[in-house]
Structures are given as C-alpha cells and as structure tokens.
Image 1 (tube, helix red, strand yellow):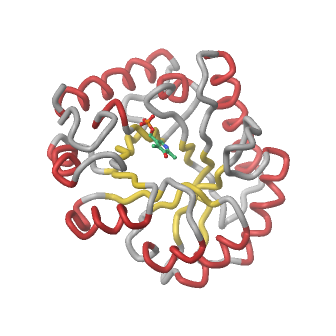
Image 2: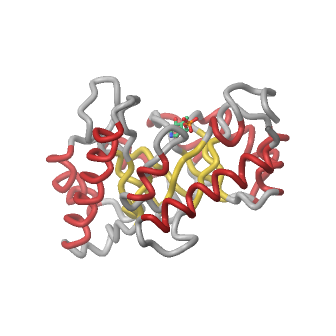
Length: 229
Ligand SMILES: *Cc1c(COP(=O)(O)O)cnc(C)c1O
C-alpha cells in the first residue's frame, strides 16, 4: 500500500477511536516513526500531512534531519545515551525517553532552551524495557525541578507486545492515572499535558485511554527500508 493510503487509514482509525471515547476530533497527533524508512518515504509522509517524525537512533535522526530540516517537528523516541545528547539536542523538538537523572543532567547542560521531555515509565515492569517504575515516577519528576532546561511535557510508555488487549489497556490506563497524579502537583516545570502511548499494534486502545501522541511506524511505512513505499 502507498504511504498516502496508509496515512488515510491510520487517521480514520484514530478518529473512530476518539469518537468511541467521546474525545474531540483531532485530539491526537501522529508521530510517524521513520526508523525503518528512507528519507524519500519520510518526505512522502510530510506531503501527506504528517508533520511529526520520530527516530530512535541518533545517527539516523541526524541523517533524516540533515535531509529534511525544520519542515518537520522532530521527536527522539528511543533510548538516548548521554554521550549522544549533544549531537541531537539542538534539533529535537521533543524527547520521549527521559528515564534517568544522569540523562536529565546532560540534557539540561547541553540544551540552549527548555526541552519538552516525556518521562518514560515502565508500567508493565518488563525487564527488557527502559523507564522509571510507576511508583518512582513522582519522586523522579520532583528531582527534575533542579534542571531549568527540562520541561516535563508528559509521560510515555511502551505496552507489552501481547495479544492480551485487556493487559495493554490496563497499562495505558495506569499511565493516564499517573499523569493525573503529576498534574495535581501543579509543578510549573511539569505541566504534563501529553501522553505518548500507542504503536501500530495498539494505538486504538491508547487513543481510547487518553493518548495525545501515538508513535506509529510499521502501519505507515512498512517493516523495512524500501518495502511498501
Ligand atoms: C519503533 C518504535 C515505535 C513504532 O513501532 P511500530 O510498531 O512500528 O508502530 C514506537 N515507539 C518506539 C519507542 C519505537 O522504538
């Protein structure tokens, strides 16, 4: 399927999920994850009205940024090594994977402006996943007050890859609850308005549970470079 059709289909599925949840149309932004896609495919996404692009490795992020530049809004969505922060920090509009204080310190030191960050939470407690544990998230966020260049834009999670839709839903629901807990603190550095959750496999559940950013790769661009353009 062509990119244009993929975009139309994903948008339609999101709008239907919003409707089911009684949410406003257009309440969710799509971050197209282009990590397996070529620059040409990324450009095609832009031509089809997708403005947010996500990459999970600094080299590929820089490669895409060099080719496309400010035409897109750039999301760094993957595990971020502290030593790579200086390479991407001037170009990343959002970082979705803030999961430790040492990373916050490095972002704060290298950034020339407050950077919208998502605190990554490991709700499902899978050992293979990065992220702060649910019960440690609020104390973690409180410690971010010392870093003026960190703005806690929201929370991010990755649901387990499973057929168990109920389990996936409970993960998203718990992230939403946690967001409400953070918001109740009214920390000026942590408005925490956004929820980054939902991927190709589970974005409709995420939208029903309150996602404001979904991160979608496979459904938009296919599995591999060059495939399904
Ligand atoms: C690859 C990736 C996605 C997109 O996954 P798909 O299943 O291809 O939609 C979303 N979030 C993160 C953090 C990723 O690494």
